[in-house]
Length: 377
Image (cartoon, rainbow, N blue to C red; front, top):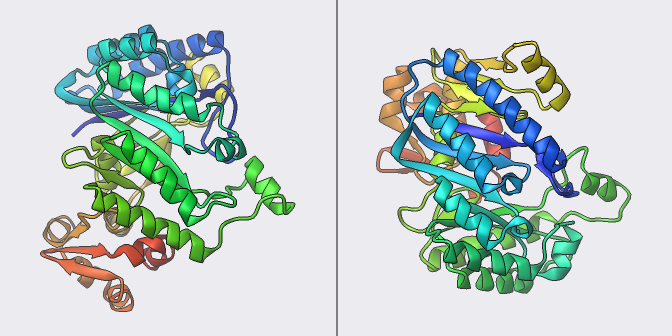
């Protein structure tokens, strides 16, 4: 398996809850950035000369849908030249509804994008304004219709929950309308107040109040119940898919497989030894300067030993409905998970379930996943 994540660190405006690396940028800045990305791609080509054809490509951000179709086509051509694309390569692009039109969407399809992830976030005009989103409810609905008209048959939609003053009935109404759009994939994210964001500042001053744990859990259970009843598979903590429509690129992360990092702010993973993680620092000035000096902008982040690889393999797998397969774990590390972590498995037996030959968290375990996995860190 081989994959590439390509980060586009520009947005029209910065959402007040977002802690991903992004900043407002002009068309000229974006064009210059793409030249830098192409320079970095040459380093990747040299460093990974035996890379097999790419199975997944993911344009993330930021707002990748600020790219013109011609720019997407050029980047995909460069990736094809460097590594090749598998015949069934999943090529995803994240999109803000307010940046899409019929011409651009048609161009994306012609360029090779075959999976579109649209950041709807809410279908309430009031809550979109609270979230500081730059698109309207009508633009979100129109974006889905335009994507279908352009020929996209693999659409993912994002929905946020546990928003300020959002009741269960409010969430149910939005979910029903979202299901009416018949997406193939839905990602759900509870609003969090991350350090350094505008929302964190407003929370500290009392202007915003985070949903309590009870309401958060009620919203999460509602989403699980109604989406699974509607035929979606709850295949990862935050992700639901129609049969056969899981996001293959995201599964690369959870299955701890190799992924190349391209662009300022991107993270990558190499499978050599027990595994190595690296990043391209989230600093556009430094990115530009290193490439101007003909230096690879990547930096090592973590080189794993056996214990670290066991821990990460376990807690990433437990994010998923497939869970942690016992036999592959034993073949990789020489013992079964419950033998490697006997105390932790004993303590978590109320949340861990053994299904066939895999260990999985139940829904209650996913609700407190961050707390439970601390036992393995």
